[in-house]
Length: 349
Image (cartoon, rainbow, N blue to C red):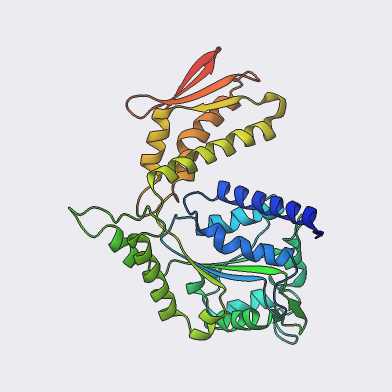
């Protein structure tokens, strides 16, 4: 019996495997997330997403610093080659009903009609797609802070895949994936993780373990208490994020240092150099920049303070020859030591 289309299937499987590996490389410590998001991308690429609604709707729950927003950025980078291909809406800026007009534009006859350009216009949504993928990603950050009128607007979008703007034009959102992040239940999760002095933190290292399931149930219960059943029923997947373990934190640090090296190579060009961060300084950065309470949220600022700022001073002084090796280390007393091989040494407070 002849088999048709096997070559196309092999190419598609290879592409999908590439998407998964790249997504999981960028999103550290949450191995189950790819399995819940990427199948919707595959359905979109295959033309199998239902008509009349967005291509995927996701509610991301969990403690701060666990990778909820990073998941959306990782998907944008995987699909479009840049984490900037996201239409991001900070719901903290839309806590009052009248502020929602910024999203859809004021109706004709209202003050500021011509001056108010809707954020959710068709042009703005299409602008975050790319030549690599026609799928647009929209992020509603901290959705629990949104005004009631925004929630009603979202119900219509999730139900019909359409949005009517203030000028009566319709926006089609069928070629979008909508993500909503929330810290609902975070306080109760924190109590579960750190129940009190003298108690060990909950073990959630196993994705399917009892600790992870307990945190997931806390997040889901908080979401169902906050949002109406109609709203929850329009969500394709609710994803609960677990706190990151030490291994994941170290991998995130390595990835951020790798990004710094790539930035040096790209921005400095012929003046670029090789950056090396000592094991002692890496340990210090993890101690200062990560915690059970905030996850990896503070790590980027810690790297900026103890790596990028001292490094910038040495670059600006012209002490780093092109192609040299620059090692950043930690001396006793918390001072940063920068070694430039084989030229010189520079000590920074």
